[in-house]
Amino acid sequence: MSTQTSGRGGAPATPAAGNAAPKPAGRHVVQLPEYQRELVDLQPGERVVACRPHAFTDVQNSYCPGCTHGIVQRLVAEVIDELGIEGITVGIAPVGCSVTCYDFFSCDMIEASHGRAPAVATAVKRVHPEDVVFSYQGDGDLASIGMAETVHAATRGEKITVIFINNAIYGMTGGQMAPTTLPNQVTQTSPYGRDVSTAGYPVRVCELLSTLDGVAYAERVSCDNLKDIRAAKRAIKKAFEYQIEGVGYSLVEVVSTCPTNWGMTPQQSFDWLRENMLPYYPLGVYRDVRAEGFATAAEAAAARAAACPIAQKGRE
View 1 (cartoon, helix red, strand yellow):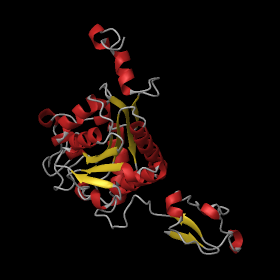
View 2: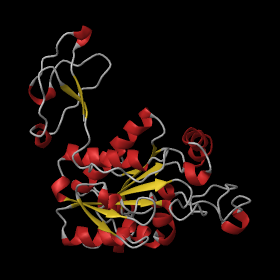
View 3: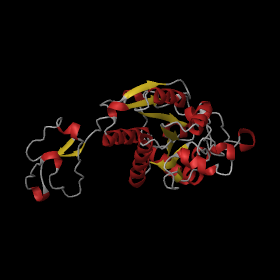
View 4: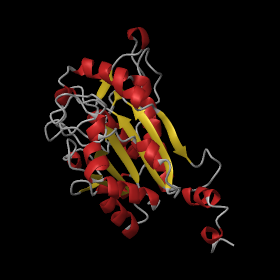
């Protein structure tokens, strides 16, 4: 946590309850959640300008420089704080670079077998429907070995939230080609570039899932600049809110970097992401049933099937 000890022009700052002191020039004054304020002993002339989210443990993470896993996980923790749901939140950790994310969140966490996070999340949500359940998965976990679980959890409209990291490669296991690897992209298992004539084309997860009736919300975001980081947080918060409000299945796909396995510096990896990944994986909202005028995904699905008599059975 950081504090600031002087106001504008060097004049002593006047502390106020709840960190409501005048905003210093060029700095953001953090408004702490009620449950955190009692933990902060502000001295005269101090105000909070940065603070680790309560839902984010004080543990050094294991991610490479330039990887956006740490940014995304902090955003998830900030949303948990802002919604005040830490005590009823259950996260599902994947197999991949974020396999140890159970160490980084203060909420309850469960480790799932490779690709099975949606199945585990489904079980938790059905047994404890009052809880907020999210899975955090990479592209190998979600779109390869876990594709069946992903598609069927989405088409069933399971009221869970999925945070999906798309860095176009298998990260933890050494840099193999993933379902999201771009055409002609070099990986450990495609040393001459992905040949679409034999390996097929990349899977566009948001576009795929947005066609399924159980999906309430699907958005693709990025974390390569401050503006997009803020947009990513808004998307993650909406995804959690849709779950809390019972709207349906929600997924936020984050187009991300993997400097280590791409063989680049952090800055080069962000440049490569902008030049190659964003044109292939455009950012934006791919499904939002509320924006379409429906209260829930189930209501939107019924409207889609309005011309099918048997699909309307029981809705009279």
